[in-house]
Image (cartoon, one colour):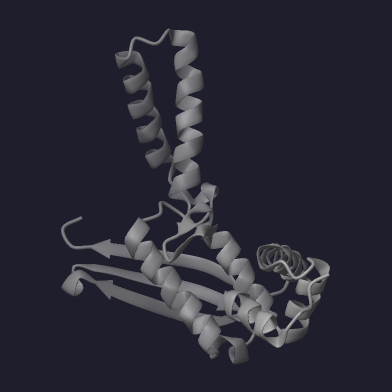
Length: 198
């Protein structure tokens, strides 16, 4: 087995933000393989996040992001359990990054249930018209519409989107990393995106 060096632990900490002991454990479990250790820590972070899911979150921040010389703006509310975590750099950076991500991707909601019914019906109508235009038989049209709608909802929801600063992870993954790092339950409560002329 490869020897686990301080340099490797430092590199893993920089890549994941996990604690020293967690990084050592991950490298030991994964035979000093950096990529496997990152996956190990992400899975551990997800398990930790699930354990904390029931806790109340009455603290947090409202973060804003203004872009294009004041032509595009986002406000997002991110909640956590304590004022202590709300004041940490990791938490504030997470809220800022989420606001910036929302500005870039214009999600329709945080989770699939948030996507307005009117938006879903409009998309359904468009997909149906496209399928009929291609001359697809009626019995196939519904399946095509169903598939396209599922993909749209997946891409339109903030939690499912690939994070713009690191497309290898989703916003849900990024949130779970911050939960693991801070040791608290965190949630993206709501957001508003304003674009001049919209």
